[in-house]
Amino acid sequence: MEARMDYVLLPVVNFIEKHCLNWFRAVFFYAAASDGKKRLCYTINYS
Image (cartoon, rainbow, N blue to C red; front, side, top):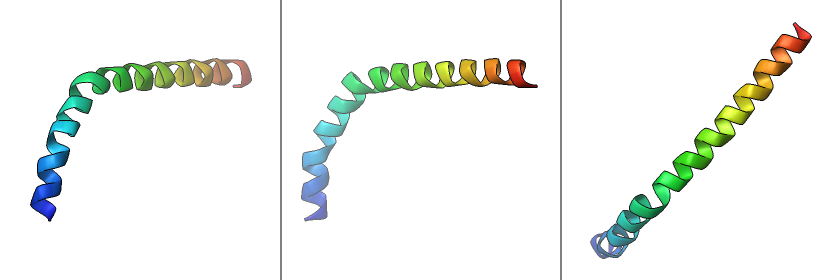
């Protein structure tokens, strides 16, 4: 059963990695950058 699940999931995972990973990465970096900017401004303003 486990092997069959892997056999089904592998193409799905490959597809997701190819098509979504860049998008996820872009969103993550955008969120991290905007969060970092907010923190930086907060630190400068309230230090």
